[in-house]
Image 1 (tube, rainbow, N blue to C red):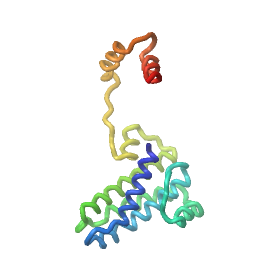
Image 2 (cartoon, rainbow, N blue to C red):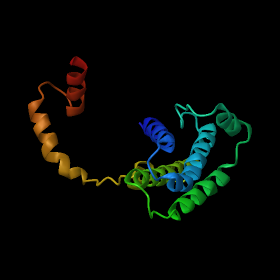
Image 3 (cartoon, one colour):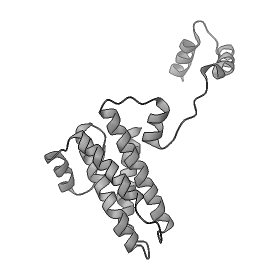
Image 4 (tube, one colour):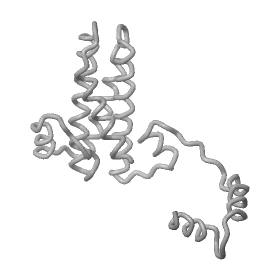
Length: 175
């Protein structure tokens, strides 16, 4: 799922870089360098973690460069931070709605890359922080006891012998 999301985001970012929106030359000049550097960064991360980039359709030279001259993980992390800072400094005056979305998407992608690199480096994140960093969504976890009424209803509804999880497995295997 993570790979699919990363791929879709990379494709969207690259595709949006090529869109021609009236009056957006200045905006493209502000956002394109960050988008291009993000693609390079992603390719380099992909050299460190198999499957990070599951599809790439850009220039072959970019992928070859990532293979030929891999930077240390610490340097890649610094590059992600620098790109985030560069993106934060992009003046939004005159940006079209699509360009504003592109800027937000690039920011989310860079935060995701930063989070994944922290995980690759061995840093441990709690589930909520990991989800927020990777997917820009902080889940609201409920106490396990809050699921007891639903489990009780399932237990009463599913026929058969044995623990509930075994009965659920048998039911799903039969369908």
